[in-house]
Image (cartoon, rainbow, N blue to C red; front, side):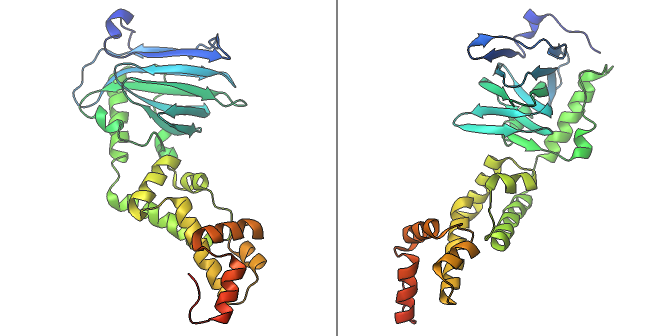
Length: 291
């Protein structure tokens, strides 16, 4: 394993500061896996600067500051959450997440499992691409199974890490066709399962995407959020059931609204009519029903 360089020299290149806190008390978990290895090499496109591993005890938090470079994290065990801007992101075992240059955040470990993760600090001409990746993403298990483990010595560490980073970079350069395929899969799922409980988070997990990333893809393609699309599709299906003579209560259940009161409130908001009123007007004027 390459030797750690002098910390004072290194701080100008990469510094990931970790301070565990719990209810205002500074208290790092005693764990031999809390460490960083600093790397001397100066590669052009992707230059690994440090690699490290840390554990946060269940229920603890770690203030994390990515000072002078991008940091790519990999969640080894357990999970937790962190905030970037106004968004809070959940991270589970096997996920990657990114901290851009100059980012300070709080990593909150799961209260039951705790959180063990490793990271690579990187610079180079391609490092800016990593900041455009989703805040949280996942890659196939056959790839993550071969990732470098800081617990194991490695003779050519910088080359090994640079190779991994190039592969991750290549896998994350998604063509637009793949993004459109994700959106189409969501549409197909909604269109065939609208009568069931639908969760944006569950659909994102099924596709191996971060919830926020999938939401942005969907809105960019459809011009509305997934929640808005689900509601509009359910309202359209509810009208069809009402036209066929279904009761308001049955329609509410058949279209995934759960109960009549919730259905009536949303139907009124979207159409300007209560379902019973809409159905009555339809029966009285079958060729001029309200919309």
